[in-house]
Image 1 (cartoon, rainbow, N blue to C red):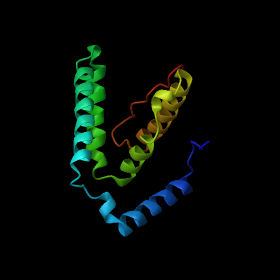
Image 2 (cartoon, rainbow, N blue to C red; image 1 turned 90 degrees about the vertical axis):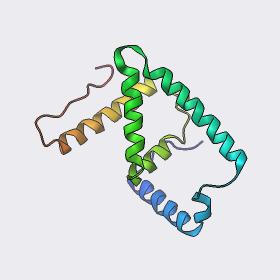
Image 3 (cartoon, one colour; image 1 turned 90 degrees about the horizontal axis):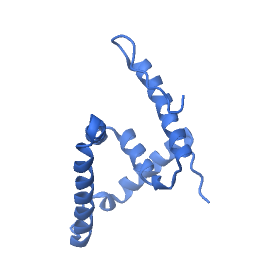
Length: 135
C-alpha cells in the first residue's frame, strides 16, 4: 500500500528526478502527433468544459468562484513550476475515494496553510482569514 504523505526532502527529490527525466528524455514531454491520444484528450477536455459550464451557473455564485479560481490557478501554473508539480501530484489521486471526514481534514489543512501564506504576503492591512470547516 502506498504512502500518501510526502516530506519536503522527498518533494525536492521528486523535482530533481523529474528535471533529470525531462533533460534525458525530452521526447516524452513534447506533444505527440498520435491522433488517438489527441482524440482521447479532446474528449476529456470537452467533458471538463461541460461540467465547469454547468457548475458556473450554480446559485449563490459558488460555482462561478470555483470556475474562476480554477482558471486563475491553471493560468498561474503555466509559469510556476512548484504549483504545476503540486497540481500534478494532487491529481495523481482519485479524490472521490475520500470520505467526508477526510475531505474536511484536507480542507482544514489547506485553510491553515493559506492563512499563514496570506499573513506572510499581506502588505495592505489584515489578511482575509478562512475559517476551517467544523469550527
